[in-house]
Length: 207
Image 1 (cartoon, helix red, strand yellow):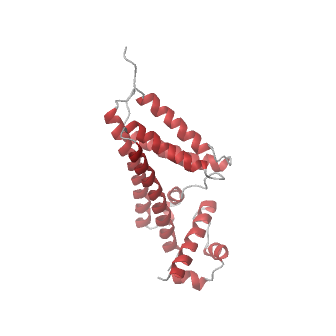
Image 2: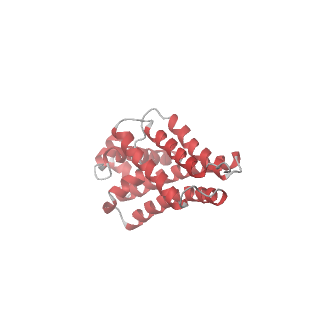
Image 3: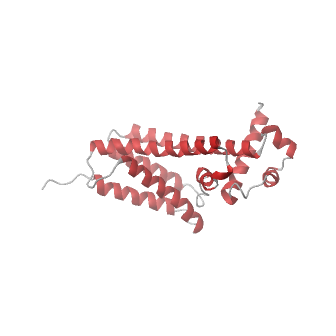
């Protein structure tokens, strides 16, 4: 595909993604996408055979960008420290630094929007979304397991439960941050999670 073709395809995906985050997939029509991009139906169907194909492309584009960002943060944390505790803390702080750079509350998560409307998608799309969410949790889980192995926690906890907890915090913060137009909410919740980890894994003074 030519550079111009790739640019048009990407413009369609990004415009549709914005609409899906605002109105949901069911509330986003092909006409909405055409108005947002200024394209004709013929131009749209040159790039996508159907709205379903566009839906798959939106999920893949969002997930790949999200995965790259988290992989980069994870690698940066690993380069900056050999200590599993410090690696986790740096990883979380990098998310908070990213959130600091936003001028408004995050507009939501495309993958979560697809889960809410899962009945509208083909099994392959639903499985893709579930797999990307699981990958995201597994990235956290790996770091938490290394931390647990290095420092026994003060209370019973598993790496998977901690990964599910931070994923739930982030997804919940999307909703509350948008509802209250509070771009600081997700950052505050990440900080609270770090405080919880500190209570679990802070070295205890000898009795």
